[in-house]
Figure 1 (cartoon, one colour):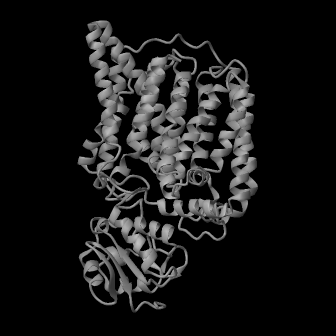
Figure 2 (tube, one colour; figure 1 turned 180 degrees about the vertical axis):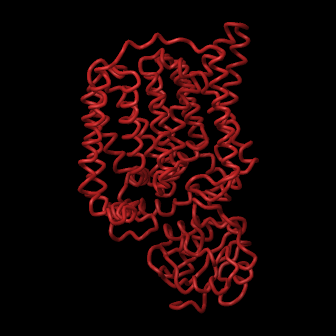
Figure 3 (spheres, helix red, strand yellow; figure 1 turned 135 degrees about the horizontal axis):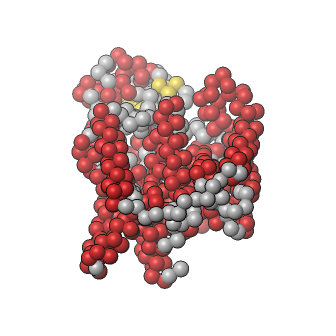
Length: 573
């Protein structure tokens, strides 16, 4: 590898580290589920194991996927740092390291290091992806393992020795995040199938038997872990399957094997009917204009849809201001125009197209089926991976053409424009909460003082009502049962009787309990984040009024940060 390119890759990684940790310059905790992650990490550091049956958080299957807890817990134990600090720093830094295997993957798909660097930059700085990677969450570490696994899978096409690290990486992925495991299997198996159907023999001259054998083993490993070990996660699956729950463990393994066999049969059939591939041609100006018009039309149609209806799986409608804010991201997508033909000049270049297509098909399936798991929004970060390479290829060609026509100054101007587009995407990674339905991921220093007081001033058995963000920290750091999303009438309702009924019994977390205390912070006045998928509504005037009356007695006050004791709640002591 060229030394200059190595330095650019290092600089790109350091820039990603800075952006990923940037929220911590303003808030002590970034990530609304951090309290639960802290509780599991702290238990691992303290006791040497993760609580299973004894864990009673809202994320009832978190303990079944211990990847980030093992990483952050090992860091905390080895360095003597607090588990919360280890979570907040180590997981995002490890996650953005995915830019390295992503660069290596892109270099294999399109063997030009400058293009691979640029593609890795666009894919890594894209808002939906880097915003996710900045969270200390299983999906963040899962992203790294997906990218690394896919790179090793492609490298294994020519060297079977890559299957040892690939097996280790895929095993780590299975125990880290369930949805990420699905995306690796989908990207590898679906991308390979579509590539062979469109251009048979492009993957390799030999039949991809070892690739299919690995993917079958990986799929069976997922099934065995989900249904054999992850008992709490299996209960989540069973609840979604309803009356078919008993059949799932029996049918899952044969379904995996049958799917791989069908893929192998289709590849064998298609290879028996292949014809000489046409000689690739550079895109003409007309084709560039046509591709750009198609992409622009699709983007405009998508924007109009977002302005009129909520995102699938969400409840808030996008505003025009949000569309303008995310314009740099839309430009990255639109500028992928013209890359389709350019990728044909590389043997594995079309794999980026089939990889993109199979993720897109999965997103459409999730939208049509209204699946609570395969939400289209959860596909965004994985769609942006191949799109990053497509945009880089297109922009590289465009800058080169300007250079051919106008010389070095045009190349310099084009390069500056590309860097500015990359910087613009880095600048919009953390949009204002208003553009995210009012949901605020950060927890302030005043929030930290409040949950620390709860741990000292309230008994550990006291049930606390608050929003999703603060409940997570009160449960995770103080150990008190908290309500999360089960008290909408109390905070954003207008009916006092409904609010008092929630005081008498609400889920906290999964068991209905009487509420002993209510915790409110300054953020909740502008937006009560009960459900991350729904809009965060401001506290209603009626709620503010009844919190100032009996039965609510303020015990802790720090401006708008208040903890109330409910002195008439059943069971209050």
